[in-house]
Length: 404
Ligand code: FHN
Image (cartoon, rainbow, N blue to C red; front, side, top):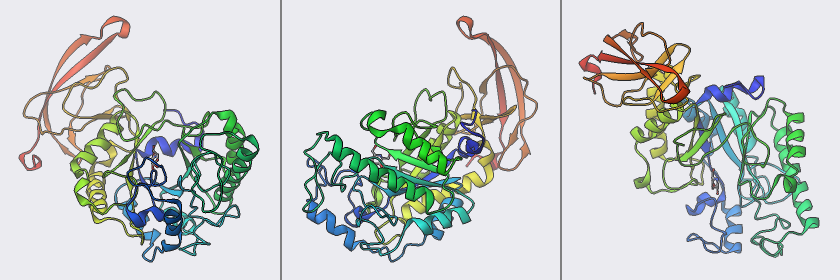
């Protein structure tokens, strides 16, 4: 797919990134989104939640190790929550004292992250939500101790623009204090583009970092779509990325029993790639900064597969636009090479719907070994005006040692 601008092409070739949700909420193993929502099953009162900021001491924070985990997983970019809905800024900011340099951590947590990810040769992404429950002028539930936020869901223009000024200033700080940032991941688009002055926000961002890739969660801004926790049956026409947890929540939780299996996660990556999208797979580090072993194991398994067969994912495009392939697994394409991801090693024909083209050779990507195959071409016609297609029925004989 055509890059939104030349320096953004990396995004459409990446196919796999690591998402990281980290903040004071990790202390209580609560979801990053809900502890302050009155109806939430994890509800904490404001005072208790606010105190977490002073208990947040990431003594084992090692962003180089984080970057290494992502690199070994075969990810091409990383996105870390610089500020989540609670308004706690992991970066130093002049707009509020509710930040990592002035509370528990007593250090800027974004600077070493950016440096480590860049050093690892990965693209640097920052998550920056539009919600800020700590900002006294953001019209939503009041969580700041002693600060009377506007009544929920009221709109007081004077107060809103005070909030918006701080929102813009924090964004500016993130795009001027840490060198090159490759991606900004907004969240929760609530309210319209006029309320967000979206075009002014986007202009400010691109003036500071013209190469920036921006997701679609600030209204009327965005280079790509972001389905969440599912793989669309029919993918968007343009660039897209599905973000997904490995377990049952975005933020840290010690319950190992809810993690999806490595096979499920790898299958998800293959399916997303076969539809021309990226998978942004989430990790919720613990309050001290260590990653759950369950997450590391799964990333290592994905990385081991990508190390020998990543060519069938990175830089590939979706194969068929109008109908799912008719064989036993996700299919990707790079030039005139089709990659078949066979979940079961076939002792039976594999049908590949291909728009024209002849099969010249069949190789096992992992070893480069030529495989015995026989092609029976069966021509067929798509219904209506969609024209001809050839269904190459390929009999593939995969050596027994690969049929694990
Ligand atoms: O509430 C957040 C949630 O914590 C997480 O950040 C996801 C990621 O897309 N976004 C919101 C839920 O859609």
